[in-house]
Amino acid sequence: MARSRRVTVSTDVHGHTAGWAETEPAPPSAPDPTAAAFFDVDNTMMRGASIYWFARGLAARNYFTTADLARFAWQQLRFRLLAREHAGDMSQARDAALAFIEGWRVDDMERLAQEIFDEMMAPRIWVGTRQLAQRHLDAGERVWLVSAAPVEIGRVIASRLGLTGAIGTVAEVVDGAYTGRLAGDLMHGPAKAEAVTQLAAVEGLDLVRCAAYSDSANDLPLLHTVGRPVAVNPDGALLRRAREHGWEVCDFRTGRRAVKIAVPSTAVAGALVGAVSAGLALHRRRRPG
Image 1 (cartoon, rainbow, N blue to C red):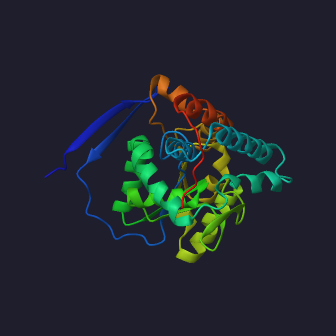
Image 2 (image 1 turned 135 degrees about the vertical axis):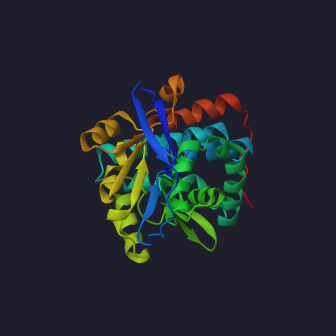
């Protein structure tokens, strides 16, 4: 008996039409222990920046004043600009990146990350990207998030989505509290590729058999590290590179929403002040613990 066959046609946000045929599923093959998938978070796994929504959640709980948010936003903006234009001289900006959490307890940060994910981040997870991750899990492959966000936030997102784990920016901790400094480099650009390469060595992964998903040209080092790079909701630079190399492109945005979400990363810090201070009345700063 012949297998049933179904043809599906879809149109992406650029008006391009694509079709593919589906047959009855083949018998499942044995999982490949050397294959894995790595997903960027901001604008790839979820709409917007995770650190932005985390800050919104903290502001709603009166952990910040408007002045605190403005100072934090300026530090983030300055860091991003230096990271792009003066990569060799950015230690001061790097150390200032997490200065706002100095003295906070790690267990409080993790608790808040869980609460804020459930309230503000979960509804913004891209269904399409989540399905891509699930396909790897269903195939018996491990799936990690790789993000510049604090690793505590990445771990919460990975746990809530049932993923293997997360790689993220690590803050220095002494006696269970944050010092306000980074323990290493920001998990950004080449640092992501280096971290994934190290993880592959420890976990026995063959990077040629691995996949990576990102929305940003900043992650080109990571995408070039694996055998199957995929552009998800790509910015203009990444879309051009993906087309040049024949990489798979997935875009889950539609219409005006795509324009609103595909903002430059440097705009995130500025949006932090505008959206938070306009929507919330903050009167005092209250630290966890």
